[in-house]
Image 1 (cartoon, rainbow, N blue to C red):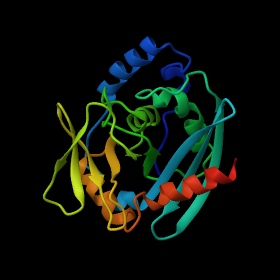
Image 2 (image 1 turned 30 degrees about the vertical axis):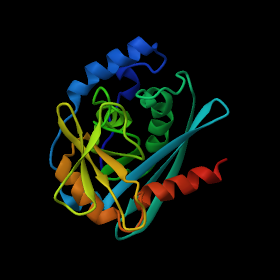
Image 3 (image 1 turned 180 degrees about the horizontal axis):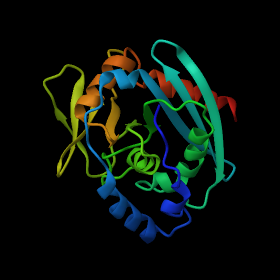
Length: 223
């Protein structure tokens, strides 16, 4: 199981201006690591989602195992100090997500985050941000592209590349049932091959990976 960074709160504050948030992203993106992640590691995942509820952010983290199925769920909440703005989702949701993950007794080898990783205007979306702060392999999972990214066809069936001006940052995964793709992007300590392995393990006939669907189901129950 992954070990989280012991001094997360000391790395930077969340109560920042827009300019300060952008500076943090530009600084911390230098810490993102791209490395292969063995498929065997991906059989144990923690999925994390969040939503705003009456000026607070509520987050749900779920740990699942490919063989043992559901293992554990935890809830986190935080008062939002940074209003939602596209490209700055981490400053809106990450504190509650970190709290939820910290409350788990078991954190998966990989954290799947409802948000973008490198598929982001500054290559440092929510998934990359959490990965760097927690020191964990992360994968971003979103439903639409952000500015600066586009899709390019690949030779693999039902998959397009997600690219920006610097290269490939993720993949768009289609299923037989839906036409709109799921956008998977590199978060931290994974690479494109890791994303392809993830689709084979966790994405069958649904647009969203099963662990995220489970986390969203628990989140809806908290309303």
